[in-house]
Image (cartoon, rainbow, N blue to C red; front, side, top):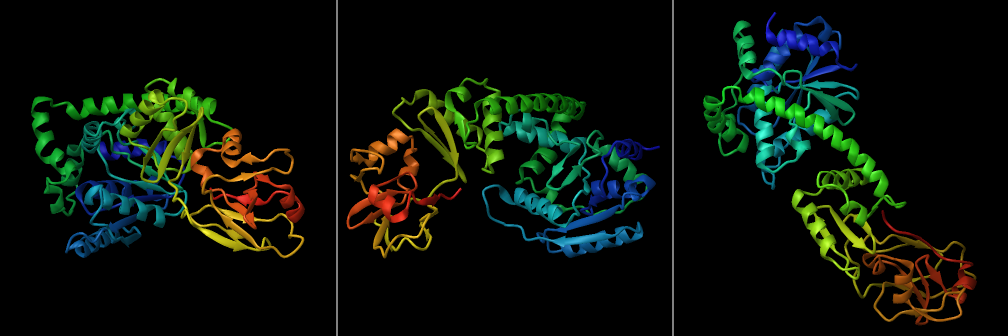
Length: 431
């Protein structure tokens, strides 16, 4: 039995349940995977099917789709062709954009619980690990591609990672397979192609066992990454606040160099915020170590920012400040939606009579006497004493009547507001 078939048979024996679908490009690698799986009854028993993503980046991409249709038909397997639009501009480059579009198409068109089989092999793993290394990745990145991982509601399965591409070439030759060579794979302007075509052949002449060695390292790092991920989960549980969007800043700084990045990335992932790059984590660490207690350091990147206030680290999406002169009349009877994503304001009970209220944001110098207090207070002092973070203070709605401040969101209200509204206002900030 050939290496490809034997590898697939062993991998299928331990594969979790689920319908099996092959991601088929029409090239040699995915052609070998498709042909070999189609020959195995245990693969067909899983409802084996095929999906081809047409990126539309080549003038003859329609011919490739037709080749895939003919191959699937010859193997008596159902095929779905999915056409996607790839953004040709962007910071990550065309190669990354095509991959993102492809993975999105897989996630959209696979039935939940499916297993998507891809034909990555040991040579691909070497390229991936070295590219990650050149980008400064840690253990999680240097573990390379995993044989089995989650893909939304499905799983991504790479059963050939332990085999060199030479094994796939032998299989293709033995079975007289036909495939398409993508000429863009020769374009060394793309980092992976440069590594594959120019760098790795030279390295292999000096280190013939390069791919085996890199594969071993990737497996060791995978085990390390899993251990660190578990440690990061424990660390996060110990330093996360009652408000899940906060962390104990000193507790985070006290973590080991290995755990700090993993813990903050896990924290942000759980909050649905984009993860930071290594440089952002270094900036955060340096600012927290150097900033005095009276400073509020902030590190931001696309889609997220981390701010310290007092002893807590806060994670939030970037916020747009409301216009300084914004003001609106309000009768207190209908809920009011505030600008710049500042939330909604409503009275718990209908006011006792017609009101002419004005709602605006802080402009400085505001004062009020809370209904349960005997003194008039500076709003600035009240906010500080209540521990309201500085970036939230300018987003709190202030309700005025006749030039007098009656209420600050749902935090404070005067005796007059107590009579008019029967208690504090209801304020719902945007998440």
